[in-house]
Length: 277
Length: 99
Image (cartoon, rainbow over all chains, first blue to last red; front, side, top):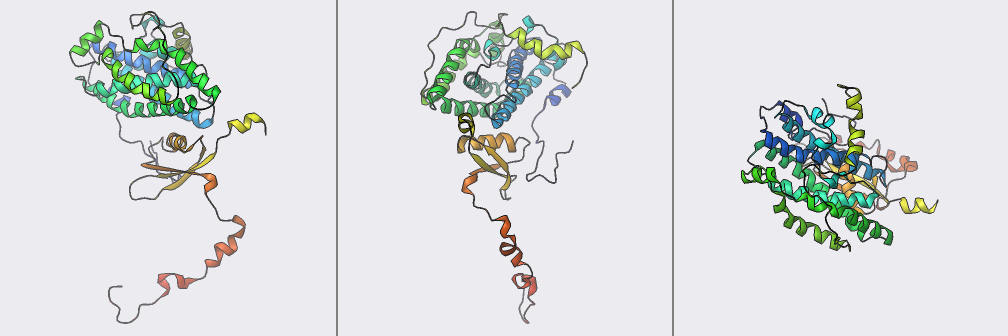
């Protein structure tokens, strides 16, 4: 593929970052427990990408359409890396895992499944999730699993920007007009009950963390709070004092939204198996 | 213009991207943003998403003074035919070394 464009004012190039195709081509086969962990992380990214894609053509300004679409593409990229790697455990492709698992077979957290709501609500979800992912990938780069470490290194650079984007908007909406402040605060209230689940451990995570492969989510909570609190306070907003939503782990409980999201995402692949578009 | 349009319209910024060290920033296009900080981020999203840049400038469009397209004759074309402004017009004087 050529990226050269003689009439462009600036020079384009593909760069030389790791790609999902590198993962697919590599001989590294994920053990089943590592593959399940990769699905935890990959499903979060996939569902968030699907949610954010909704904003294309619907954001407050065209520039913001592109900003959210870029972030969605980054998340979809994370999902491709992680699901490709997960699939290597069972001889499945990323598409088979994305399009042909049923609702109860996904591991996504409920935060990313929550509705976009208005722009403030989406930014609240972005702020929480980007802060969590920033702390997660900052540590996952040291994973003893080489593939996970490489994916984390790639993803970390992207997530740094997602966090910056969300923080900038949180400041502007929170410390903006009365109406923007109200909506941003309501967005935080809407999303905050789903924060605890991000930091819930389970047996699989404990075992993988003991072996230096996974990051134990509960160990991220303190730095998450330290990073997100000053942003929310500077934006003249409050950290919601709300109870966590019931059932905070990835053991199979999921939000009522997941089925709708997957229905929309999977319908084409399931009606026309093997279709490309 | 309706009230909605007044509220919804962000100021315009011009974007300049430098593709690599040693080169100048080149005008890449323009965008809308609520302020300069967000303009830089929008510029990153719109104009460097294919790995085009190592540095980005944004400038409020109304801060740029530009030449008048109608005065092209007096402004630019009048410099044509003035070969004496080019180094190649001059012949080397005798005895000057290293030229």
